[in-house]
Amino acid sequence: MELLLVRHAIAARTSSRGESADARRPLTAEGRRRMVRGARGLAALVAELDGVFPSPLVRAVETARIVADAYGLTPEEGLPALAPDRPPQEVIAWLCARRRDGTVALVGHEPHLSRLAALLVAGDPEPLFTFRKGGACLLTLDGTPRPGGARLRWLATAKVLRLLGAREAKG
Image (cartoon, rainbow, N blue to C red):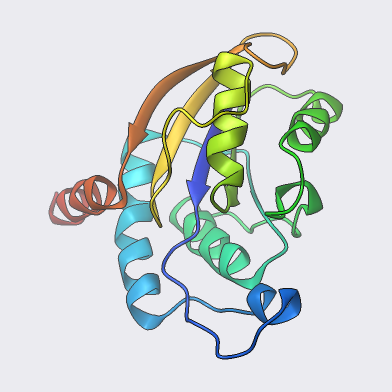
């Protein structure tokens, strides 16, 4: 199985405090525009996706729609295990229950995604790198998903993905 981890695009700020206000923050117009180009770049790097699964937060759901559109897919419902306050081990349990080959994209948040990547690659959730908004990485999971059982194939910033996407749009 291959796992594409994508951090959500630029989201609006909120003047309200609290978890529910944070969960409702949408993408900004600039965030959408940049992510459309970045999603084209993702499609240049990863030819096929079998599914796009966002966290339940609005900004991740909106980012997942953009990524799914680049692949002609419909994103899945929000995956509670990808919520920023959940331990990354819950995502591993979800991957084990899913038990499919192919490539899936998970759209989430920092520091959750960097902890998940570190746990899958190094067996320890201490982040090896951080995702900037719109950035992504591709992991290869050999056998049953488990801590330390993945290989990092590539890591790309949002800017690199947008540059690839612009190149693809011209070609």
